[in-house]
Amino acid sequence: MMALATAIPSRAVLADLLPAADSRLGAALRELSLVAGGAALTGLAAQLSLPVPGSPVPVTGQTFAALLVGTALGARRGAAALALYLLAGASGLPWFAEHSSGWALPTLGYVLGFVLAAALTGLLARRGGDRTPLRVAGVMVLGNLAIYAVGVPYLAASLHVPLARAADLGLYPYLLGDGLKVLLAMGALPLGWRLLGERRS
Image (cartoon, rainbow, N blue to C red):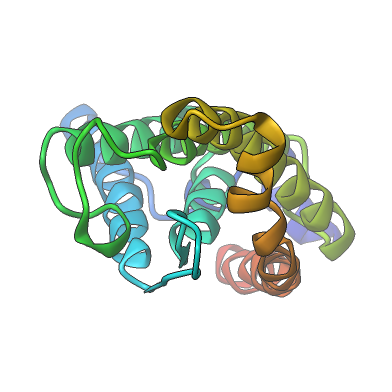
């Protein structure tokens, strides 16, 4: 355990454990691949979508993917990946939930929130927030709060409804699912550290 702690820097995130590039060009390509891969993963997860009766906000896998991307890549790469996801989707690539795209979606605020959440979870991961189940739970809860802090007011403004009504439509029905995603992350992220850490040691 002591050797593993010495081998892995305390401020590393999971992506830092991947093999390093041999050249400056290779390093740049590695960074671009991580960012593009994070965006693509979020776009793929967004297609795991279930409509919620009476709400324009479906249940999707993109929230979980966005939080994992931020945590695994770190704040800078994670925010860049989710910004790429946002810009590509808003510009017409149909990889938002339910194959949607564009700037006029009432749910776009949640995607804006993904960028903030990825930066926040990545920042916390660099402080060890992704290495134990209890810390992961705290990081995931804060990341979800960041998404809702942007998404729900945006939804209210888009639909011209009070904030309380927007919370009924775009917050409360999703809390149970968020709790299940937190439990999943509590197992997945520490396991990732264990597996990648053993390969590094």
